[in-house]
Length: 188
Ligand code: GAR
Image (tube, rainbow, N blue to C red; front, top):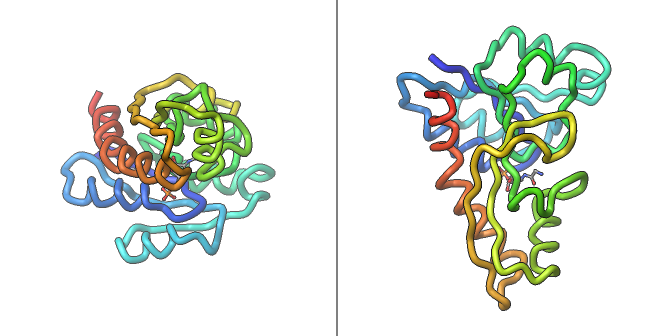
């Protein structure tokens, strides 16, 4: 069984979609949700879906090896950042090389980097009068949004689209593609 751990900071709709997709799988299991936000909605989702979940603070993540040690015990084949907003520490990346991936709600390298998350991205896409946007699934390295691309999918942006319209299109792309890309990656 391939083991997946998901990091999320907020709502967790991608986490829920991944958990449900693999719920009846014979070869992939989402074993744990980790969050930096003790009030994140993802914790309610994990509870409802009966997946073990833990929250941690910045000290446990960046100053001590607490989160790293949790991961060593969980021993994941893949670590997925799904709406996770803190920079991922090199100390953890070094222990799990090529095993940490992120989903970004734009066509990287466009609209990436620190502070570019969620609605900030969609607002920037509309303000910039982009005619298309999309999602990027990529490996995580020590810089925000810069690791090698695994997968992109695009959608059109119309001149009349609001940032909320763009958010809805991106959400649909994420729901459709993310679990399948993860499945393919784990079966390679
Ligand atoms: C998703 O759209 C994801 O692509 C984005 O946050 C959202 C999380 O939604 N990630 C980033 O912006 C990372 N820079 P969710 O909590 O409902 O899955």
